Image (tube, rainbow, N blue to C red):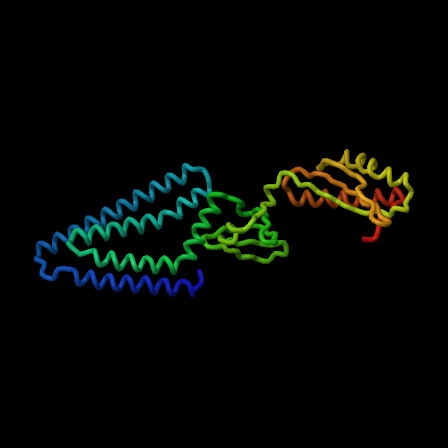
Length: 286
């Protein structure tokens, strides 16, 4: 979170806290007897013990739940809820104690409500990023270590943070992208690709021997039929453009390993060029 966002929020919360503390101090009765002071002290001790007991029970329950879920993302989400629940229980305990010793809470509730609205406006962006973080954890469109494409960037996910996600692109540069941008953009998960369809279009000079041009698709089909790691779909002459014949080769690659795909594509491209030269054909100028 940027300092320009933190400082106004902290100033607003501190001001609301000081005003609330001043009103609470003025609301406290000043003529308490010794027995009343003793009872107030006893109640304070009991409330503190009850809050600590509730916090400990909540923490144990969350740990037990996260250990049984068997999902690292959900376990991390459950663990991140513990500090918020402890703060909520402590706040409820403080309110219960103040009401029990006779403090008038109406004015404080009004001030806290106004302060809560101001704090909500100041913390709107951080809270939105946190909920986007929960969305990424629950939906799991990608995980750390996977390659993704987003907004024209191809990068590997290094870490999914509460406010932003850290990526590493192909040239090794670090990219920090806000979670809100990731949840609002179209993200392509390259590692979950089950099958890649590759289309290669190339043009040959039309003045070549007709027998060689007609033999090319059949030679390509025979050659790729025995090629491992791919499945040939078609190889045809599609169009005549001026003095060039346009051919299209289409094949499918199984699996999601990008490195294997690039090696197969290299083999096919170089083999196709060798086959074209072996038939005495020439590529047309683009």
